[in-house]
Length: 437
Image (cartoon, rainbow, N blue to C red):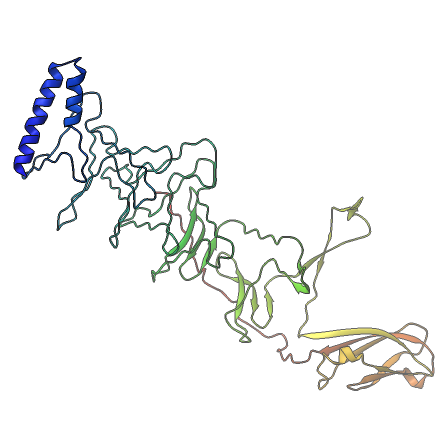
């Protein structure tokens, strides 16, 4: 083997010398070409260096130091070959490279293709990457990809990550306080996530395994947090929350079924635990809703009513009249109506719908007002089915009257004007003023 290499080296030396001496001799040039060509499945030329020096070194002042070409018309990646092949045949260690490119000012390795990938990297080792990039510069990038096309396309990108049918497309790790992913867009969407049709997985899944209430989501402006969600589910918003339900509130295929703008569900049922609390900045509870439907309000209840004069201009309402909801000493329910005395007596039956929602075991109140001249009216009997109204002093008038019934509600046993302590709560998410790094 060594004899063959020595002879080949001598032959190449003679051929090069002959080429340099014979400038225009075509037959001599043909002999050199024949000498540098072979038709074998083994390398035409091999030089082994058993020390630390280069086996082959090409130097050019203006051109390419080493140029390799292939003319194989490949079919598929397994059948392909390369213009330059670098192999690491070491049996131990992981610091060697098949191909190493070093540049003082330019790019270490450049790959160009007009039909396929400019650079391709393949690895079958567990935990290894097909392409690996590393930099020690503070502002450097381990791997940089850029698409300089001026036309936007859904298939174009600076970097493409494809995990295939079973693996994640991107794994990003930060081993310090630096961001694992830092995305920036001058005018487009900074981060866009989309799932394929029929996929039940979420477009964005954030998982935080810390146990100290660490934020899983945090949105900041120049002065501090404007929105955050910690890993226990506590959500803080410093601005205005705007929720808009599209179209109307009725499902097209489910008549009568409501589509609310906001749904709030409790973690309990029937325990009278708070589902929704509204507190002031000092923690004073101003309003609450429990899982039994109880609503507590520290202030007044208002409603905006319309009016005959001053509320409408043309067909547009420009003003409303503020109205106040009444308050009571205990929870009751009212009904009203009209009846007529005949010969001084009237038996009034309770509306069955009204009787169905009142506590018939408790006494109810009836107020009557005559609508004509008489000696006066009084209620002579109150039963679960109805009441009797008579004229005073045994009169026998035939007169109409109006009545109002006030009864206790069925199934409600709340105390009358109970004294309760002012409730206070601790804000679950203290205000912070984190600055941008």
